[in-house]
Structures are given as structure tokens and as C-alpha cells.
Picture 1 (tube, helix red, strand yellow):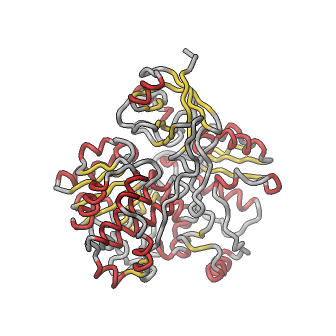
Picture 2: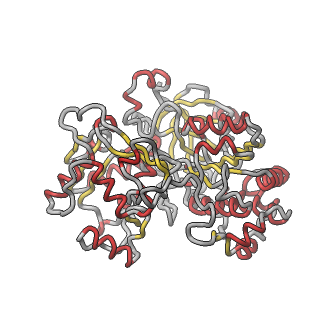
Picture 3: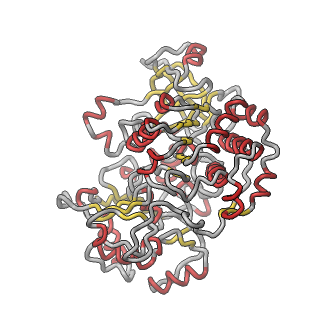
Amino acid sequence: MTNSIGEIQGSKCILLIGSNTTSAHPVISLEIMRAVENGAKLIVINPMEISLVNNSYRWLQLNIGTDVALLNGIAKVIIDEDLADIKFVNSCCENFNEFKESLKGYSLNYVSSITGIAPDDIVEVARTYASIQPASIIYCLGITEHTHGTDNVLAIANLAMLTGNIGKPSTGVNPLRGQNNVQGACDMGCLPNTYTGYQQVNDPNLQKKFELLWAERLSPIPGLAMTEMLNLPDERKLKALYIIGENPVLSEPDITHVIAALKEIEFLIVEDIFLTETAQLAHVVLPAASFAEEDGTFTNTERRVQRVRKIIEPVGNSKPNWSIMCQIAKLMGAKGFDYSRPAEIMAEIAKVAPSYGGISYQRLDSCGLQWPCPIHDHPGTQILHMSRFTCGLGKFKPVRYRPPAESLDAEYPFILTTGRSLYHYHTGTMTRKITGLNVIESEDFMKINPRDASALKINDGEKVKILSRRGEKLTRARITRTVPTGVVYMDFHFAESPTNILTNNALDPIAKAPEFKVSAVKIEKSTDS
């Protein structure tokens, strides 16, 4: 997030796109509702009728996968009606003329034909977002889990710069991270193309820096994302794979292929707190300690680094993740892994990652700190890009609408889109073991619009079979008007009926995120009782 969670309730206009916030980020949804209570105009852009629609000023129910066309259309209205913050654009940004030129083809009628949104509604939303200050954009996986997810994010950034809604309180471009420490994992270099602190591995100067720090030769070639690893051609198949705290047998797309690929790996190691579906395929399982059994830090969606303190000793043979990795590294002959406690690791993080340079366990004892925090007496950064963009000038990036990777046809006439339930988390590794949550929600449902259910002669609660070009699954139908016609929706938390057996492993070419949000499917009534 460029801004902070506490600033949301100070926004006068919130553009919420690609997020079912109440289910996936319930605490932040409360902040959004407080903003509305304070008089903010909430614009919801979502194919689904999420609960925050009830709190919204406008709801744009766009066709799935058409975000770029809509965002470009909104930007064109803002420019055409002289609603842009030209002073901000001229002083803080570059490439505006090329961006403006790229929007010429995005007439209201063209955008409406793609998105399904009426031209008048597009104009109203553009005027509202551009004229009410401060305005914030909040988005989540409904934006990024597409083959054009990077373009979606760039279109959002274009809109924020165009209206000057960046670098000021209660504004900004604010992604909601998918898991509790996924921001921290990315910060620490758990990405295939960066070292710690988003320092590029293919930058010769940064490569040299880390080689000197770590006294090791390092490759300048970026690595592969998980989905890419499991889709390597036969001549490049992985021989060994070490998976930590991830359950790709349920979380990756096209899991029939995932399971087959994992079974072909000569040596599969899984480190986790439970024997997950993935761990059951492993040659070696390393029992890890949970958050309550180890010291460390979490970095949340607003870049806030916070202490995690051990309250019980590791149970059984489990060990903290950092300890397991250090022991393995030393047994393999690596140097520099002689840490005795996590505080020492934090000290090295501060040494190698400029944005964490002023963060230490001593400072975190009293409160969390938001990076960038470059030196020991820096207070942390609540708002990014306040005086200037980190890179100098903000660059407008023209993006064009591209349809999803998989198209509908007579055989597969429905779009399957996926998301998260309020009651379960990710692949259910922890939440499915909680009796109370299973009482509330013990099975998955296929949500379907009443018109589609009537056409297929499907009754509420009836068993149905959903088939894609990759697999099939059985589940029960839940008839609801929250899903548009032509679309069915499912969560992916349930190992008994894994949704990702159906989803497409086509990737965004830059971010390498799979297109979980659009898969072509057909629906049949099941003969099973």
C-alpha cells in the first residue's frame, strides 16, 4: 500500500476494484464502512454483488476480465472533461502525451460494449473519482489474478497519477495482500527476480554487492515462479524441490498437472506445520514451528513490520523455520548461517536491504515500523511518494485491453471465477481443522445465478458436475443473485472437492500470476446422490 490502513476512513472517495473485502480482508472492510459513515462515496467495481455494494454510491458490475478497458475509459473521460490534475501531472509525471494518445480508441460506446457498463455510469464514476479529494484506490486479487494483471495495476496507477491522488493522506494505490506475511516474504527476496529489498538479481552492481556481503558467487539469471517450475519441458524437469509453507496441490491451477509434476520430482522436501496434501507426496517432511513457537516478524499489507514473540516451546520435533534452513545450509557447507537467534538475522536484513536499514528488534519492541525506514532514528514511512516519486518522475504507462487467455464456446459456455470465504483461509491447512468453522461452512458450493440455474433445471442444494478443459469436480449448487448470469463462483479451500482442478495455468507474462479469475467451464446435473 502506498498509504496506511488508518487513512482509509479519511478518504472522501474510495474506488474499490477486484476485492471482496468483507470476506478476504474483514478488518479493512470495517475501515471502508467507517469512511462511508464519515461521508465518503464508495465506488465498487466488481462482477460479483459483494456485501459492500450495500454501502456503495455506485456499483459497476463489469464483465469479468475487462478492467483495463474500463479503467482506460474512465481515464479518457477525466482527460476529455478537463478533470485531470494537470499541475501534478506536469510537475511530477512523464509520458503523459503518449498515455493520452493511447486512449483515443476508448470511446464510451467501445468501452461499454466490452465491459457491459452503461456509458452514463462510466462518466459518473469518472467525474466522482476525479472531483472528490482525497480519493483512494483499493484493489486485490480480482485485479492481479489475470493474464493481464500487470496491465490492470498499471491502469490503476495511471488513474491515481492523472488525478493527483498519490503521495497525500487518504489517497494512493493500495493493494490488499493475500496472506498475513506475504508482503514480508516478498520483501525478503522470495521472488524469482529479486534479492532482499526488491534489488534486481540481473543488475551487475547489485550482484557484486551481494557477492561481497555473502562471499558467494551468484547467478545473474532470474529464477522461475512456482507455476513455471511445474510446467518445465521434459528436458528441463526439476530434480529437486524444497517447498516451505505452501500447499500447491490445492493452491496452484490445473492441479491434476501439478500432482503429476510433483510425483516426477526425484527429491521433494516439504516444510510445514501440518501434513498438507502436498506434504503427503514428499520424500522428506520437515516439521516446522508455528508463529506461536518462534520469534520473528510479520510485515503486513501497509508495509508495517511487527514483532512476533514465542509463547510456547516448539511441539514435538518441530523447529523454527529459520533454524531448519540454517542447519541444512551448514550441512551443505554454506558459510554465514551461524545465527543463534532471529534478532541476528534481522540485523543482516537491515544491512543488505536499504528500506529495512533502520529496523531492529530493539525498535520493534515498542511498536511496528513501516518501511522504508533507512536509518536507526527514522520514524518509518506512513505515506509513499510524498515529496516525489521514489524513481524520480511517475511514468504513465499506456496499456491496451486484451481478453482473458481462455475463451468461451458452445461446449464450455460459463466463466468460472474463484475467491475466498470469510470462514476459511487459503487451502484450509489450519482453518479446516477448527470444529467451529467447519460447523459454519463444511463444504464448497458452486454459486450460480437463478436464470442460469433455471435454464439448466438445477435446484438449490442439488449436486452438479463442473467440467473444464483440464478436469472436473462434484459439488452442490447454491442459487444466488450475487453472481451474474454466465458466471459461476467457487472458493478453493476444500480438499474434498478441489476447485483448482478446473482452473487455467496461463500466466501474466510479467508478474507470472495464473489466471485464476477466468476459466471456461460447463455444468451438468450429477447423477450422484
